[in-house]
Amino acid sequence: MKQRVLGKTGFRVSEIGHGLWGIGSWSGSDDEASRAALRQSIRGSCNFFDSAFVYGNGRSDRLIGEVAREFPGHSLVLASKIPPADFKWPSSPKNKLHDVFPRAHVLEYAAKIRSAFGRPIDLLQFHVWEDIWAREAEWQDTVAELKASGTIKAFGISINRWQPENALAAIETGLIESVQVIYNVFDQAPEDKLFPACRARNVGVIARVPLDEGSLGGKMTAETRFPPGDWRAGYFNPANLAETLKRVEALKAELPEGMSLPEMALRFILSEPAVTTLIAGMRAPGHVQENLAVSEKGPLPADLLSRLRPHRWDRKPGN
Ligand SMILES: NC(=O)c1ccc[n+]([C@@H]2O[C@H](COP(=O)([O-])OP(=O)(O)OC[C@H]3O[C@@H](n4cnc5c(N)ncnc54)[C@H](OP(=O)(O)O)[C@@H]3O)[C@@H](O)[C@H]2O)c1
Image (cartoon, rainbow, N blue to C red; front, side, top):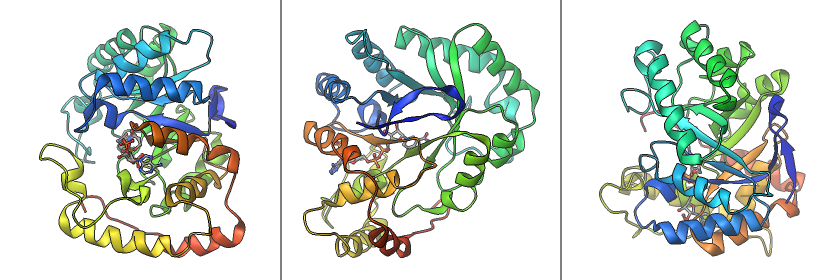
């Protein structure tokens, strides 16, 4: 597994990281199976794990904390996220920072995550962000306080879905060490402005939703349905599912002999030098094995990359 350095943090993280949303919150998750997937990842040299308090109200924070303790000699990098105080996703530019990330709330949830991890938090992220908050002292002082107390080592922002430019002012402050953004073969917009800004400021990039919530796994069909209460039931509603499947089929037509769709999708992301790590949601042992193996295969050939550019799909927040 190849590693890249996460911006100014100096953390050496695996190119393929493990995303824990499914493990914490999606239907069909089972803690024993999740522990097995996490152990398999660590044994396969994945060392970056992205959790959030809201993934099962601390469920995935606890699970990765427990499993990490089984591997004391490994340099694991554990990330999690502070929920907005109103528990609403996404945030709105009409919200005031003080109502979404007041100091007391941030300290309270950082303490909960630290306790679930059983160790300091390597990377703490805000789970929503509005760039109009960038210059406000309250979050800057709270983050400085968390670092000074040893609760966290580094701080970043998870950017709202399909708003990749809604963190450029935060990057300019020089006070954030990473951004987490949706980037995949459909969602190529971070290349326009976000990635150049991250490169200029040496900000680490965590590419999330690398498989478009599963569609780029290539196994969904027009009959795929998710139970009510599973977030994917809305994301893959019949109209969006039909449009997505059409685009997935167009991508399959680009596949070179012997390459699977998830391999092509993940190698597309690793071909972008601004990306530090991609975090794939993985619960099935076969997915862990297949995805971790992609790092050694390296970037995609230039001709395939240029054929994938027109598959860009710019979606609007709220779609
Ligand atoms: N606002 C935010 O900050 C935010 C929002 C979304 C996501 N995230 C982070 O980003 C991570 C990744 O995104 P995601 O988990 O939502 O979606 P994703 O990684 O794009 O897709 C995950 C789905 O793909 C399936 N899959 C994985 N590998 C596969 C393979 N080789 N072949 C076929 N299917 C495969 C998984 O199945 P199994 O689970 O059954 O293995 C799961 O259903 C999250 O876990 C979370 O850490 C953050």
